[in-house]
Image (cartoon, rainbow, N blue to C red):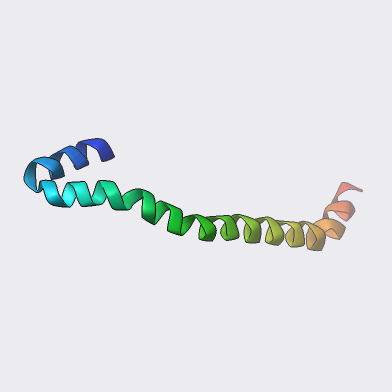
Length: 62
């Protein structure tokens, strides 16, 4: 779907399409650290949630 939209943009306004083609990897590289931080925070919060709910899960198992 993205490729088809890019082809339409290429036909309508080729300088903008080429600029998008060049800038897309740069934007992806810029946002990569934020994604990694998000994954780390999600894992840490999942661990905290598991520790907090452990007693309730152990009581429910009895």
